Length: 180
Image 1 (cartoon, rainbow, N blue to C red):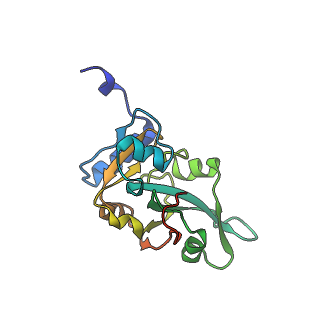
Image 2: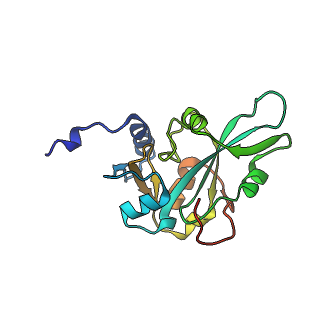
């Protein structure tokens, strides 16, 4: 034993690990030596294809006018080699009188409990509206952030659908090879 295994995981990673354990998931979060704030950094650190990184992107759905009673997080999980088409997401999650917009770091942290660069698809502080892009289904195994920029976990796309209870949708831009 070198002592590294005695260092506690960050609290956010522990939350993700607890959800995975409750689901009976075999692969627990791992801490990477370097940060994986972007899909490319994660793919490089893991030695996997860029598309195997499940990006968790948070948008902010809010009321167009009046009180902000519809100020909720919208989580879009897509393959690392795809860009999210915001118009497609808006069409799926916005009712008349609401709009989809960018989420700033404070909004992301307050709604998810995670900092940008480490947003997990699971264990959010407040349950988001979630969509999973069907482009992830082309892989047998994918990797997702585990609540910290240095932490990830491995799973199958079908597990992601089951754990989040989120619908599959076509929410990526048609252009291949671009990443957001």
